[in-house]
Every structure is written in C-alpha cells, then in structure tokens.
Image 1 (tube, rainbow, N blue to C red):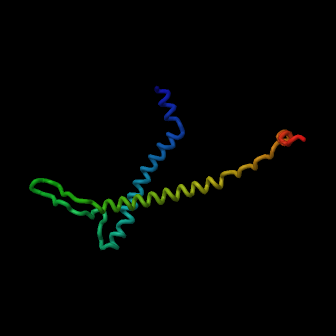
Image 2 (cartoon, one colour; image 1 turned 90 degrees about the vertical axis):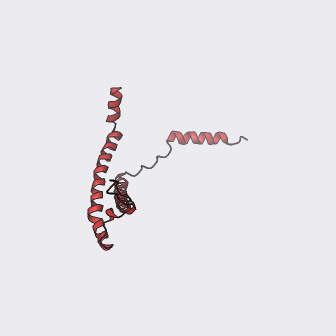
Image 3 (cartoon, helix red, strand yellow; image 1 turned 60 degrees about the vertical axis):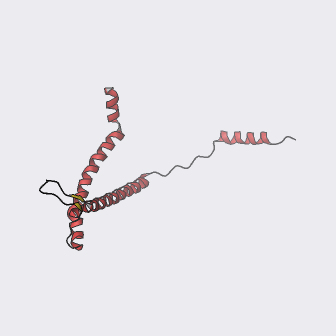
Length: 135
C-alpha cells in the first residue's frame, strides 16, 4: 500500500497539480491585494469616497445591551470578490492563450503521408483485375 501511495504521488500529473494549486493560491493573494489596495480605492474615490469593502445593507442593528452583533448584507465585499474573479479569469485567459501560441509555434508540421509501397500498388492492380468481369 505504501508503494502504491508513493507511485501515485510520484506521477507527473499529481506533482504538476500540486504546484498549480500552490502557485494559484499565491497568485490569488496577489490579485486580492491588487483589487483591494490598488483598484478599489480610485473607484471608491470616483464614487464619492466609498470604501466598497465596507458597503452593506444593515438588516438588524447591533444591540450593545444584549451584546448581539449587527446583521448585515456585505455587498461591497461581494463586489470586490467579483472584480478579483474577473481579473484572475482574464490573467488565466492571457496565460492559456500565450501557452497555446507557443505550442503552435513549436509543433513540427506533420510529415506528408507516404504513398503506397510498390507491393501495395501491385496488390491493388491484381485486386482490380480480379474484380473485372471475365469474358
């Protein structure tokens, strides 16, 4: 069982997937920082200084006496998440497109299919002669 597990982990696809997940997580953190700290502040400035991450619809205000927290729909955080997703999707699209182009450039042209061998030509002629009606 241990050998099977080692063989499973040693497969190229599993290792590639693990690397992709780790790099994807790090890339997600970079994009989140880009959206939250670079893109959203100017958008907030254009919309009257609103901090999108703090925009919300309060359903029930906090009760200090009963020590109950506020209940709110945090739609600003959702907007930030959607923008983050769009940026990640766009960057992934660009990367896949570049890799696709590189693979097309590197792919050798297919060799032309060789014609029939002399033996095949002879056999074809014999077959055709045998199919002709006798007479």
